[in-house]
Every structure is written in structure tokens, then in C-alpha cells.
Image (tube, rainbow over all chains, first blue to last red; front, side, top):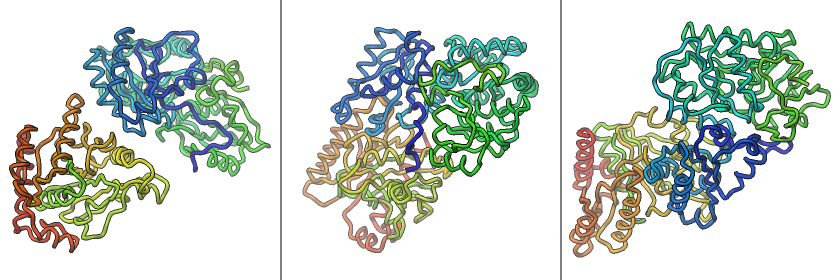
Length: 378
Length: 253
């Protein structure tokens, strides 16, 4: 029963991760579900819902369709909607019920693509995993489908893993400005403020900057296919952004990966809970700005190279609670909803995470890129 | 790589044929995996001398978590054949088809094929293609060919026809194709003519003709396949001949 949370909520689901990652790319995303996933996604997981149009559809799967395996109805509905909307591509993803009936996304995507003539991408979500896994697969597949070989451009950088589930709206602008201020050209900010044309040009970059683990698989693909090295980190605080810019130059020059979020020394009296790239970058920023050392609890899927030695991966509420009790930190930095499993005597700094607390703290969201820590942590 | 799914009516001898074919392939020096896709979990028992492997679903029920290594859910049997059973839910509860899908996802996560590097993978599938779960072995990436086991009995041929139609329905999906029929003789009147009539109508061939033989029962009572028990008996020779045909086809692909 380790996955049962009695106090804290769960993170946004993998299907929300897919929708969020593909929201601005001009495709049509279809979630195969009765419709519950749609309201959860639009109400809790998507701040752009009322501000920007996107083709997000729900299949309205009925009990009878699920029992009878009426795939033809789903295929006909998707082809019909695609005919009306003429999207650049179609993405299919799913929820628990199709998982139970063994819906074959790959095969159905083949049929839809054959009937509609539109590129169709199957994504294997089931509504039970985290947004990271959904967004990660979506970004990987869209890069696989659209990135094209092209000439390298000097100091060109891809940013990967940027979705509103991890970063406030406007982060794409802030990160482009930070890159420009440091002498880089931004090719793509996958997937906020971006387009398929920019994705096509991603192989022209000389380095990939991964800002959340959602972007790691796509960055790995670009490395394996086009030889683009990976740097992990988010420019936070005063000193760390300069160091991170240096890491980007170093990676370009040596054509080697640099997991720059892992350069902090774990330990100290602070614990940061959250997504691995962001949380470990924050630990780096604390150290660089001489605010002490911190240990990261990565609560979502990650690659251990992104974390420093001594950081831990814990996802179950009881494990996180016990770790904090044993660690006895002076301060915890996390989404406010984690406060309820933190020892009472521990100081708590709020860092709202949209994928965790949704709109609860939306008005407290603030741009974090290249900003002083006292402005980020309140 | 030979990737084969064996379907047929319940009780027609799918597990017997699959295990003997696996043993025949192994006796010809091939690295073989046999995956039993039946909640009864008895597909590989005669490759394991009667000492069964812990089925995947039983592992999950027992430990309440997914296995982390192939060794936890497999056993090596005759000729180095890697034996795996999906198993199933508690009889009368849950969803057996879903169990097969879960097992297949798990085997993919554990990178079974990459690690074991088999020459042949045989899926022994329960009865009919009754739902999505039982079609999982013929999905892209798993079996490429289907062999349907049938006798000349009416219900066996009826089931064979259902299986053939179901697989044909998936033509647009890059699923496996029906390779042919294994005629597992029950010595009914006009048996060969009846099976041949079905095969001709379906446009498939009788790939193997297995005579009714007490050798199979005798060696199964000893926890063996006939191929292991007596490779020179007539039944074993037929399975070895089938294995040779499949190997030759695979090499000429």
C-alpha cells in the first residue's frame, strides 16, 4: 500500500503530461477515456486552458465500448475530428480503462494515420503514472517525428522539458532572455512558446539544456542521433546561472554531457522536495549563493546522474515522512502541500509546484529564471 | 528470430505441441524461450521435469510488487529452454487477459529478448482470441506467425476457424499472420480431409501432422516431452521436422 497517500496529493497524471507537452504544437491530442481525465486536466493541470486554444479531445469511452472493444468507433471519431480540424499531427494517449482492456495504441495509430493521412503518434499513458512519464514520452516522440538533419549553428541551444506543470507561464520568455544575455541563440523551448518549425531545427543546436526530467529522453535522442551533448540545470539565484552558462559553453566545446544540477554537495540542514532537475538546481543555487547546503528528495522519476551523491529518490508519502523525521532538517523547501508531512519544528519555505498543488497557489507563482533566491523563496 | 504463437481450442494439445516444438528447436541447438499465456500455467511443466516455474502473476500476488529480474519469474528447462508462465488471477476473479498484457509489458521492461538473445520465442496461448489480452502475443514486436492446433473434431475446427478470422481481422495492424495448422490427430473419421478442407478454405497449409501416440502420454507422465524422452519415436521426428522447417524459413528470411 506504499502508493497510497493519506495526506499529500498525487502529482498530475501521465495523460496530463502529454496534453501539457503538446498543447502549443498545433496537433490534436486525444485522451481515450470516459471524460474524467479531461476535467482533471483542464481544471487542475492546465493554466493555458482559458487563455490559448488547443485541440484536446476526449474519446468519451463508454462501458459498452470498453467491453465490446469498439475500436472502430474511436478510430472513426478521431478521423472525423481530424478531418474537421486539420491538425498538424494526432497524438493518442490513454487512461486506466483502456489499459485494463489492453487497447493497442500502436496499432490504432497505424489505422488512424492510414485513414486520415495525418501523422499519428501513439503515447502509452494509463493515467496511473506521473506527468513526467507522459510529457517525457510525448516530447521524445514529437522530436523523433519532426527533428530534421540541418547545419549546426554557433552557440545554439535547445531547451527541453519546459511545461507549465513545472514552470510558470512566461518562463520561455525568461529563459530565452537569459540565454541571449549570455551569448546563446535559442533554437527551441520545448514545449512552451514553441512550434513544430522550431522542433524541426533542433538538430542545429550545439547543446541541449534539460530543465526538467520531462525533457531528458528527447535530449538523449538528440544526443544519440545528432551528437548534441546534454546539460541539466535551471538558472536560479545569483551565481548559479553564470556557472550554468559556463557549463553550456563547456559542453559545446568538449561535446560532452554535463549534469550541472548534480554539482552541489548534498547534506546540510535544508531539504528540497520536488522534481529532480529543478530541486537539484535549487540546491546548487543555495550553495553558490552561500546559503548553505541542501539534500534533494526527488519525488518523481529521474536519472541518478541528475542528482548529487547523497540525494535520494522517494515517492511514497510514508517514506518521505520517515526520511524527514530521521534527517531532522532545519528547513524544508517544497510545495506548500508538503507542509503537512514535515516535522512541526522544521521551518518551511513555500515553492508552489503546479503539477502537485494545481491552482491552489497559482497567484503565488512567479518567474524563477535568473532571479535572486530571496525573490523565489518566500 | 522465430516468433511463434500457438493457438487452438482448449484441450486440443497446444501445450503439448508447443513444448515438443520448443524441445525440438533446442535439440537442434537453438536458444528458445517458451512463454505460457494461460492462467493454468502448465505450458512448460514437461520442459521442467514436473517442477513448475513461479508464474508472473503469482509472483506479483505473493510479493505485491513487480519482479526486478528475469530469474525471479523464469526457470531453465530441457535444452536450456527459458520457461515463463504468465499465470493469472484467482480463478473466478479479476481479468486473465489483462494479466497477459501486464506480463508482456513487464518482460519488455526487463529487456528479456535483449538479455537472453533467443533464436526462437514460442507463445502458448489459452484457447480462443477472446479479448485484447489474448491477442497480445500476436501484436507487433511479439509473435510474427501463428500456428493453429486442431484435430478433425467439429469443435476444434470451429475454434480454429474463429482464431483464423480473428487474426485476419487484424491485418491492418501489422499483427502476426497465420502460418498454418498443426494437425494433432485424434483419429476421428475423415480427419485429414476435414482439416484439409478448413486449411484450403482459409488459404493456409497443414504445416505439421502429429499422429496420435501413447508416447506423448507416457513421457508426460514422467514429466518429459516426447522429444526429450525418445527423440527417435515417430512423434518426436514430426516435431523435429517442423522445427527444421521453421529454422530453414527463418534463415532464408
